[in-house]
Image 1 (tube, rainbow, N blue to C red):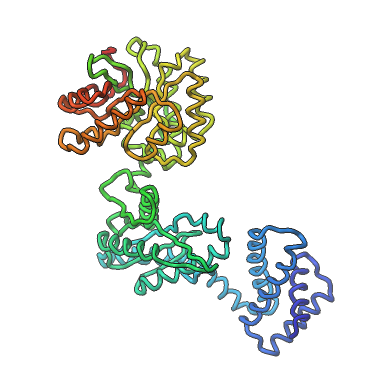
Image 2 (image 1 turned 135 degrees about the vertical axis):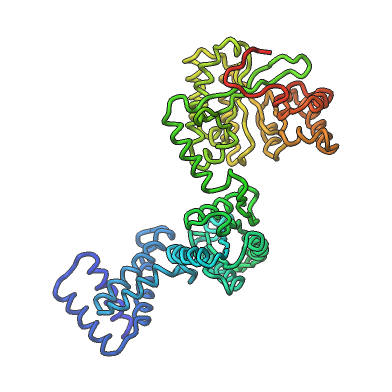
Amino acid sequence: MNETELRRAVSDLLALFAGKHDEELLRRRIELGRKLGAAEVSLEQLVTAYRFFFGRWCDELVPVIHILEREMKSFKYGGTSLLLDLGLLLLGYRGEVARQMQMLSEVDVLTGLLSRRKFEEEMQQAIEFARRTKREFSLYWIDIDNFKLVNDVYGYIVGDIVLKVVADFLQESFPDAFAIARIGGNEFGVMLMDTGPAEALAKAQVLCQGIAELKVRPLGEDIFITSSIGVASYPHHGQALADLMLAAEVAQVTAKRKGRNRAQLVDAVDDSTNPTVVHERILLLREALRSEGAIVPFYQPIVDLETGKTLGYEVLARVRKGEKFLSAGLFIEAAEQSGLMKDIGRIVIEQAMREKKSPWAKDRLFFINFSMREVENRETSRFLADLFNRYSIRPEEIVAEITEREAVLDINAVQAFARELTDLGVRLAVDDFGSGFSSFIYLRYFDCYFAKIEGSLVREITRSGRSRMIVENMVKLLQGLSIEVVAEFIENRETAEILRRAGVRYGQGYYLGMPSRSPRSGD
C-alpha cells in the first residue's frame, strides 16, 4: 500500500468516529479489511502504520489550530488508542483486541513494567504466600524527586525518557524481584521476597545512591535525578495490602520531608507513622469534630524566671476520649495528614477567645500556634479579627507563634501573614527557634516580639556543653535584636537556673507548670 491509501484509511476511520456512516465509506472499510486479510497483514504492521500516519496528521494540525504541545500529546495518545481499538474490531481481530486490552491493563505502556493494578494483584498473592509459609517480604515506594521540574524545564518527552531510564535501572538492580511496577506518574513499586526490614533498608539506600548517579543525556546535557524511597515489610508494618501500601507511601513522604534523596523505613514503634494507628486517630478526630465539647483548649503557663510571675499561657489543643484528654502530640500527625488541623485549630482558638475574659486570664498573654498551612491561608487574619471584635479581645494580648515544623514554601505568604497580624496589633513569635534555617529567615523578613528556643536544645544543656554554648549564643543574638527569649521544655530546677543565668527571661515546661483546662491563678 502507498501513503495515499494509508492516509485514506486513517481519514475514513476518523470519519467513523465523527459519526459518518454512508455506504461509500463503509464499502471502502470492508474492501480494506479484505485486502489486508488476504495479504496476511500482521497486527503489528497495522498498528505501526496507523500510529505513524495519525501522528503525522496531528503534527500537521499544530500550526493550523495552535494547540498546545501537552494537549496534542494527550490527543495523539487517545486518538491512537481509539484507532487501534476500532481498527482491530472492524478487521475482525476480536481475539487480538481482548489480548491487547489485557496487556494494556497489566503492563505500563511507557516503561514496560507492571501496571499498578497488576502490581497490587501480585502483592496480594505475595501476602497469601507469605502468610501460608511464614515468610517475610519488603515493599519499596520510589518517588522521583522534583519530577515536575524536569517536565517544566525539558518537556514531557524528556520526562518520559527519565522514567524509562529509571525503570530499566530498577530491572537491572533487582533481576530477581517478585514484581516491579510503575504505580504512579513518577512513582515505582518494587517487591522483594524473603527480605526483612533491615536488609530492605540497606538495599534501598544503595538503590537511592545508584539512582542519584544515573546520567540522563537526551539533549546533550546531563539531567541529574534523585529519589525518595519508602520501605515497609510484611508482616512487620502491615498484614493487608492496603496497610502495606500506605506504610510504604508514608515512609516515602517522610523521606521527602527529611530532605529527599534518601531511603526511609517505616518505624513500627512510632505510632505517628503507623498506618493503622494514624487511621484510627483520623477517625477519632472526625468523631470529635462532630461532638460538642470533644475538642478543647488547655493552657500551659509561661513564667518569668526571675520573679516567678506568669506572663501568659500557651494555648494547646486537647481531644477528649472518654474521661481522658489526648495531647496534641498524639494526634497532630493524623490531623495534618487528613487536613483536619484547620478545623481543630479554629475550634480551639475560638473557645480560647471566649475564655480570655476569665479571672485567671486577665492581663495575661495567650500564645497561639499557627501551622504553615494556616499562615499561608489568607483567611486566618480575617478569622482572628472577627473573633477580636466578637469577644472584645485586645489584640496586643495575643501572641501568634509561627511554627517551623513544616518547611517554608512561600516566604511572601509568611510576610503577608506577619504584616496583617501586626496591623491588627498582634505580637509575633517564632516557635522552635534553632530547629532549622527557617528561624533565621523569619528574623530577616519580619519583626518578632518573642522567640521560643527549641525544646531538645533546652533539655540537653545540663549534660551537653555544646548545646549549652549554642543556647547561650542564640540568646545573645536574639537580645541584640531586642527579641524576648522563651525557653521551652524546662523540666527541672537546674535547667531553669542555667537558662536564667544565660539571660533567658521566660520559661515554659513541666517544672514551671503543667497544662491544665482552667488555671487556678495567675502565679
